[in-house]
Image 1 (cartoon, rainbow, N blue to C red):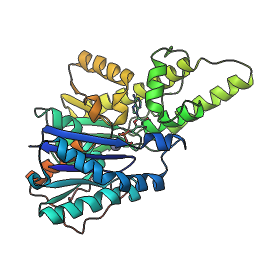
Image 2: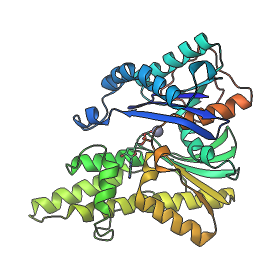
Image 3: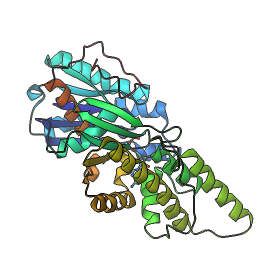
Image 4: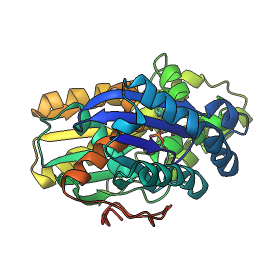
Amino acid sequence: MLGIETSCDETAAAVVADGHTILSNVVASQMDIHAKFGGIVPEIAARKHIEAIGYVIKDAVDSSGKTLADMQAIAVTSKRGLIGSLLVGVAAAKSLSYTLKVPLIGVHHVEGHLFANILVNPRIPIPHVCLTVSGGHTMLVYVKDLCNYEVLGNTLDDAAGEAFDKIAKFLGMGFPGGPVIDRLAAQGNKTAFNFPRPVLRERGLDFSFSGLKTAVTNMFKDKVEKGYELPLTDVAASFQEAVVEVLVAKSMQAVLEKKVSALSISGGVSANRRLREAFSDVCERDGLQLFLPPLALCGDNAAMIAAAGHARLSRGEVSGLDIDAIPNAPLDIQDGR
Ligand code: KG4
Ligand code: ZN
């Protein structure tokens, strides 16, 4: 299975055998370009995908030890992402599918993230709950079966990764903010500031991070106006702790509600060291199996798309060459077309 992923700012291609064996996994990041603008510029992202896609696919196929003629199917992210970016991957995948006369499978980007753990853990219990948390989404998903999901909770405003990015930008730490805050927080005091834990007291499983973001920026401006010098490490650690605490609490609530014995976490924010530590502690305490992806599969990559495509193809689901790129498709609508 050749996987192709271009939903945001990473041009990625991968070759995966049998849904679980990664033969190659190539990711070309555009981060340096977008960092100059303090965020992803959709028009630039699409143009850069066009420049890179051919090379990235060639690199993925060559480094897999296979040839294009060996590819038995093409999986591509066709749903959820920036429209201009998605279109580049979808057009490349259609061309390859048509030329090689192999099936094409459209994959939802979030479904790809769910498969980051399934890919490397063939024995992961099904059903389980997955917290998928990135720059574009924060979702709790009940994985009832492979390719059969129920969205339990969603973000009402900013995604968790987006909150990391916005706070880092506000504090002048650069883009993307998650890895910078992760690093700074490691040297800070996580109890220095008592930031609000958004929607923690509400019983639903939705998330909201914009209030936390406002609380951090207001506190910072207020203190600076009064002449205080705030240690950025403490601000980073306290902010990160508030995000992690909410993610842990809502995930454990979802696990209880669905009575499952396993929790998986995926998406760019799952690389966060404090998050990994906090979830490991709480899952050990409660006797839950925890699945975290290796760092290379946390952020956007095409191996997870190939794995999801493999699962759909195994169920006989194939997309037509008229497949569309759909920027806002919900995860629940999964007809594979
Ligand atoms: O999954 P991903 O690569 O792309 C999307 O689908 O959005 O996630 C990117 C997001 C960014 O917001 C980035 O700041 C965040 O993941 N991120 C992190 C860390 N590494 C990446 N957030 C917190 N801690 C990290 N170590
Ligand atoms: Zn993603």
